[in-house]
Amino acid sequence: MEEKTATNQSIPAPPPPVSESASAPPPRRRFRPVLVVILALAVLAAAAVYYVEFIAPYETTDDAFIESYVAFVSPRISGQVVRLLVREQSRRRPTAG
Image 1 (cartoon, rainbow, N blue to C red):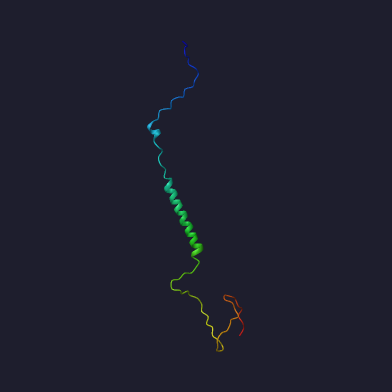
Image 2 (image 1 turned 135 degrees about the horizontal axis):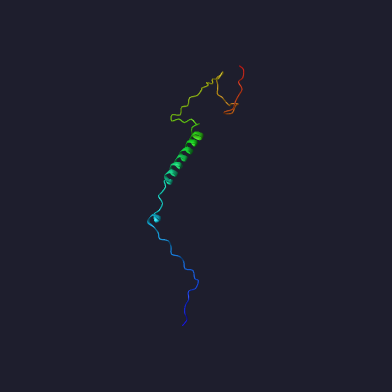
């Protein structure tokens, strides 16, 4: 009979024993709540900038009354106005008279 001899075969080493402290997950960090607070502050800051830049500069009213100067126009002669020689919102130089 042939005698079997050990050859140079590599046998994997067994894994090291696992202790209880090594298998426990690391303690959770408080990263998520901090991220949520920072995100909420960023959203509030963006909303404040939007309000100041785009909404606050405009007048709003509930009763359709805005304080302004009133200019009364009265005719020098009686009759109907057929046409006006000015466009709306155009600037005119004051005439002497």
